[in-house]
Length: 270
Image 1 (cartoon, rainbow, N blue to C red):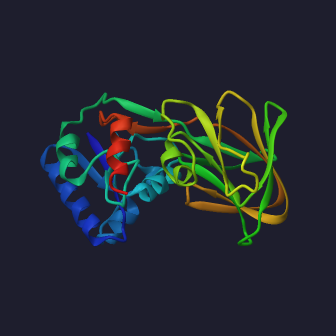
Image 2 (image 1 turned 45 degrees about the vertical axis):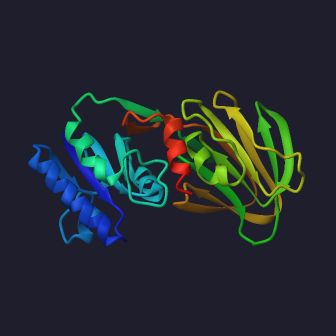
């Protein structure tokens, strides 16, 4: 097996663990290379993620490190996370069990596909999100006005501090904190969660990915779009954003962990 290792670079212990993990995998007969930022933190030569062609990418860090790595990919490569964060919903392996699992991994391993959402405006791609896209005002304590259009029909109008457009994978992230439901990642849909809506009747919606979904921003206040907490762009006061299922899902190495068992285990840490 050919592995590319990625580590959070702001934690010396994570870097030391990644170095040790790589050495142990090499001793077991696997091929290992380091992602360029990770290698740079170790004063070594590395490979940028867009140029890498491994069988799998092993990411040592929290959900932020995993989301950043996915954003860097020009084509999707199977990934597996080793939890080195607060909770790590996207990381299936714990540090003390990762080596045993990775040593046993063989070509043809099982993959779990996770849906992403693609966001565009005026024919221009704004980004793709594995967890969520967030629309918030650039002026604190000001509300935005939204219109949700489903299959060409205005389904809801509301004012709120912002709007979360979440995937089922992201339902255990910001959307859960904002009062949204936990969604089985095998369901393909877009979860809409208004942030502090003015009307109590404005509730989260789960829209099937087959439907046409448009979010219209009709406000006097400028707004920002944030993708997976990694990239942001100004979208002004009025915008029409088309939201659809991405053509390229994220590929996770199947660590044979039941989703609901994992959620129960992770939530006990909060």
